[in-house]
Image (cartoon, rainbow, N blue to C red; front, side):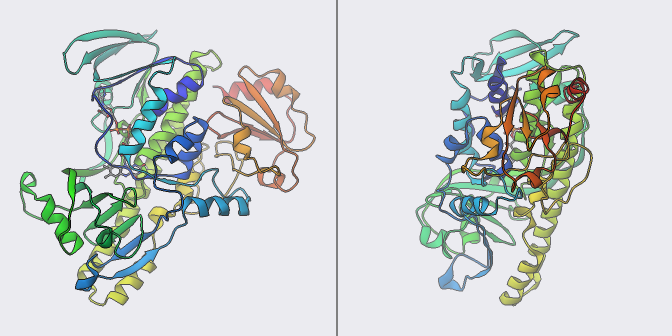
Length: 499
Ligand SMILES: Cc1cc2nc3c(=O)[nH]c(=O)nc-3n(C[C@H](O)[C@H](O)[C@H](O)COP(=O)(O)OP(=O)(O)OC[C@H]3O[C@@H](n4cnc5c(N)ncnc54)[C@H](O)[C@@H]3O)c2cc1C
């Protein structure tokens, strides 16, 4: 859905087929990180998404507890405190040093986010979006791809001819299988059990006040709206046949006592740490979970997929529009696969910390000592700003935890706010943008531009040092394409930047 929206934004027609009749009932992701929110903002969706998310005044705290049942001795061991959207916005504005994102992160479940994305594409004049239609098969040749579609309910088939095909078809991707692309890494790392439920028992479920996650050594309770929607991610009891697991019993044991609820969905599932060996072949590409699958620690699955969709989107559009050379689409895998690997490794590291904490729960009987040990291990899974904002497309490995703003070509453009209070990001064009700080002559780049280009003059001596060059050329995905204090040969720059 994000890729369809990105293509439409660049004026390119597409068809999206989804074999299910509706968007998902499974909550799955619960954090849309600040980088995804910046990208959603450029797709015109940030405000619509915020409207269905957890209220902006609510915190993002992660609280480790013994049990929710305070009357039976349950207690909070350690709370990692994180600001609300409102507080984070104020911090972003106050710092304005390039270290912050344009948008704070957002707490929202996939049940809520998908209908907003669907509404953003259904009825769009450039998008033919069809639910209840599956991709059955495809064949590609030098000029295009012929796809066989099947209506899920009736079984009726249809053939469609397209220029390109993107397999955004999840972990069991048929597109990836057809391309015979293998997955590397570890499959079936751990068995999990998910219970999504509705309950008004906030006296219990918010026993220590509002928090995003309540965690124990056995799992995580996710507050999906701080009101009545909750998800418990836990382990099934060892040795029990998965089909006979009783979700009600699991909930009671985890919470420390029984409470009123309505279970919406409950099922076992398995975590993976996998990366596709290639991100496509010829005219066919993989994006999202079809290319990578992570353990959710860190919340990198969807967020990485949004980055894939935006990178692939502008490159496909530039190719279809005739702006790009033959190498641009090949850069999709070169740029995004290393990010896919980096994020897989980060998710694995964060899981390692969770495993250590689970061991502490088993062995440490003193709750004060347990709380101190958890605090000392930290919560990098929700503080890895380098993973979220510092990934680069120039092959330079940056720190996964801290984010250092840079305009090195390949890096994400640092975000700042101008003197009039507007965000620099909000001045960027939908295609390329040339930022001009000071008196450099931009005309060689402007005169030779083979793609729509906007120029933004930034007359602010405080901000100029953050950007480090008088001219900074920014791509549609807000990564830096080129920077310099002067430019003689515009053609050479465009030729490199557009493949
Ligand atoms: C418990 C859990 C927690 C998570 N938490 C987070 C989080 O906090 N943050 C985060 O970023 N990520 C999180 N994730 C990961 C996130 O849910 C996935 O990464 C994300 O859904 C991947 O999106 P996708 O569109 O690539 O694939 P999917 O969401 O799997 O969508 C693929 C779609 O393709 C359809 N499809 C498949 N085959 C065909 C076909 N042949 N024809 C037509 N349609 C087809 C499927 O029906 C499906 O709707 C979590 C995942 C889980 C399980």
